[in-house]
Image 1 (tube, rainbow, N blue to C red):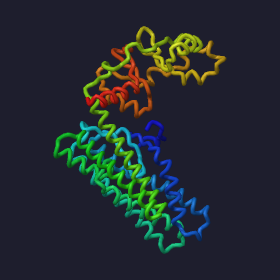
Image 2 (image 1 turned 60 degrees about the vertical axis):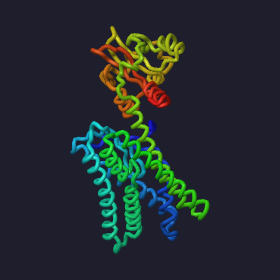
Image 3 (image 1 turned 30 degrees about the vertical axis):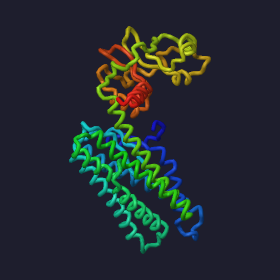
Image 4 (image 1 turned 90 degrees about the horizontal axis):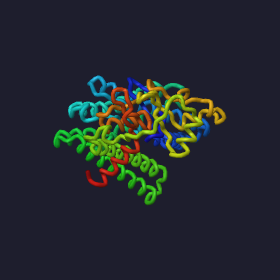
Length: 370
């Protein structure tokens, strides 16, 4: 999940693509190329395929923008949305929502899918008697695909809209949000596996290679998205009650702004292997410097360049406070794609939090059943 392209911010929400789009887009292009009449040249069908994939991505993105606008209008803070080929997975905690709001968002998601499919079909109805045969065919195909996506979302497996409905019912019945999310996510993984098996059977028994591969891909994406949601829930449970002071490294590698890069490399990096250094004066945070920053400077200038010249200043850093929860720290690190974060107390650096430490703690507690 760390290496994903960002689409920017909409309504203050960071949108990013899941890597499965790298398969989804070529697959959509292949579907269009094979489904459109061979009377059209291959290059025209390829262009239509690219247009169809971009149109599908735009429709999925618009759906998520609408849903998250609704969430924000209801007071639900959403900071990040990961776009899968079927829709988005938002970062929402139990404290930020209620069963009734979850029910509203799930119903809105199902309705939005049908509305988008209906808009595609309405455009097709306008174009059907015109000379724009290829464009009309593209819009009709998009209407069909989005209608199939709307039906797909009725599956009761999280993070599909049907799965959100299931989670809401389980949450209302048990009073346990995390447990409800876990069960709904297991259901999503189960349906994903069923689709994969169905696709394999089509390949082996019926010889339907193309349909089988599509089903396998759709099931795989659902399985991955559900597994990610379940891991996030398990992570929140594992880190519950733990704060930054409990797990921070108190002896963090530090240096001063006046030290040259050559001295830092010879005396610290080559000896300890450290890649991240806090830059401080009298205990007060001035910035950070990493090996990535150093590599941007030509080696012949290392002995004449001071750390203060290339460091990331404290004003541009994301920092933690001693009583900040470990779960929120990990969410911030994932959102900003950073590996370390200084911990401050009264503007003084008292330690450093590493993302690897949080993930390792989660795995250890899970192994012990804690």
